[in-house]
Amino acid sequence: DTAVSQTPKYLVTQMGNDKSIKCEQNLGHDTMYWYKQDSKKFLKIMFSYNNKELIINETVPNRFSPKSPDKAHLNLHINSLELGDSAVYFCASSQMVGETQYFGPGTRLLVL
Amino acid sequence: AQTVTQSQPEMSVQEAETVTLSCTYDTSESDYYLFWYKQPPSRQMILVIRQEAYKQQNATENRFSVNFQKAAKSFSLKISDSQLGDAAMYFCAYRSAITGANSKLTFGKGITLSVRP
Image (cartoon, rainbow over all chains, first blue to last red):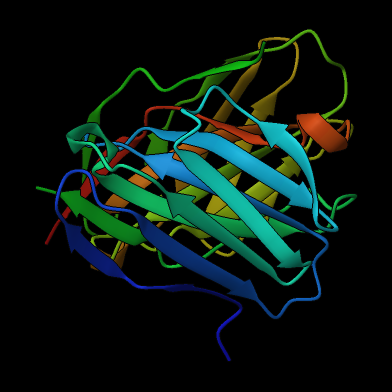
């Protein structure tokens, strides 16, 4: 059974398009995260939701909008994609009071 | 703000030998968690080991162990009996024990480990 899943795994799109990445976890966790891994492999937090409430919103362009319909899902919508958005996006989940975060397989986004 | 430093970008080890990956961090907090994650070419982020700052005993997981030096703010990972499957990028990460907005992981830049057969 997949613990944290993301769709799609690969996404190739043109500049200016709008795209979404979906994340689901079946671990019963109450907190979910989005991280971005850039071309130099550096990982940085973007957003976090706890029980559908936004608790972390790092310095991310407002073209990025997370949405959490329920505590098992956290989606990432990106408007007006730019070349610099090309990266691997990881979803992760944990219990709020638990310290260990479990990661999804990542979504490689390539903006042409 | 907390920072995590992995100063060695690459390391190499002979199969069956032991290797130590270094990590230092900076924080003003007294309670926190430290992690090592492995990222193989498949890009999956795999938890290797974790350490609670309030525990003096170093964590171990099979061939993986840490040397946690709280006063020195050092958290190194030792891999014993290295195997070809250990070849990957390894990330050191910090998480505050304070929940909420501090629950994010702060990562180091990672180190690429290669294993020679």
